[in-house]
Image (cartoon, rainbow, N blue to C red):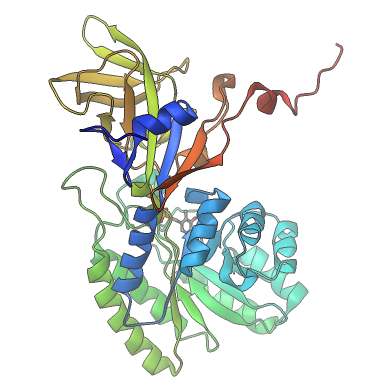
Length: 410
Ligand SMILES: *Cc1c(COP(=O)(O)O)cnc(C)c1O
């Protein structure tokens, strides 16, 4: 593709060229950024034993899973389907930690047959699992340390009313279940939800888990979950991963000395690894001037890109068809028959119908949450890797959304 001046590039590839080649709307991912984030996190914890399990649910395309496997990551899976995708991507079963919530004991048993690591987050399942397997299959236990790490209620999981994990106040009961069934607890886990701004709060949660860890004598790892915040705009705050690395590694190494064994720290980031590596690009269908607002209406909707409506997430918008020039204020909306606003009152270079708008931070929880609402087709996904573009998921067609419908004569 010819590179013109001022073109918006992803790893040297002009995005407008990708739009012409693959059509609109389109998800585009940049492997370089994923690798950089992975390496940055590994580097922050270079003074201790660390394993990064990529949280598959953020962006589940098998090629992305393969990329992280090649980097040496493990996998965090929350459903049996994610476990199977991980195995398809070539992960060693022992490198997959399955962390379900409120799933059936049958599903957990099916996953146990696949030899992946099992994380249990309620006492009912712990009892049933222990009764069935005793110490044949080791388990990890998900603890809820009751700290409120992030700012967003919808994505915070560590607070007192949360459905996740086993309360720290129930540890005596956990121990009784473990001892009566002679279970082997190989790991402890916490995941306090997303958007951790304050390293201090995270360390407090970690301290609670380390305190509990003393009571389990045969641990191999402690999984501190994730929830690391990334920047959504210039000068946005993000989790200070380097500060976390320095402080937690030091504390963890001390703990291991006292414990008498070298344990591994596990993290399971999703957003931190892929958010900034993703872009969502759509075409402007209509510019609609009302009495109070100028709307830019796109050939996509919240069915493809739900985070702004679902989480009030802020995603920066760039008019890549007009990289420079005069700006105007727009409200950017989708084509769904329901209010689906992507951004209110955004200052964007003047948009003409046909222009491509690019949304940043579209790697995590974007394609993964796409649906067929309004009977719309889901977009294609493209990966830019080492300066080349690869189609990694085809755009859906009408056949895809009608395939499973059963026509009956009524
Ligand atoms: C969603 C999830 C993650 C990933 O969270 P991010 O905020 O995307 O890093 C990690 N662990 C578990 C158990 C999760 O459910």
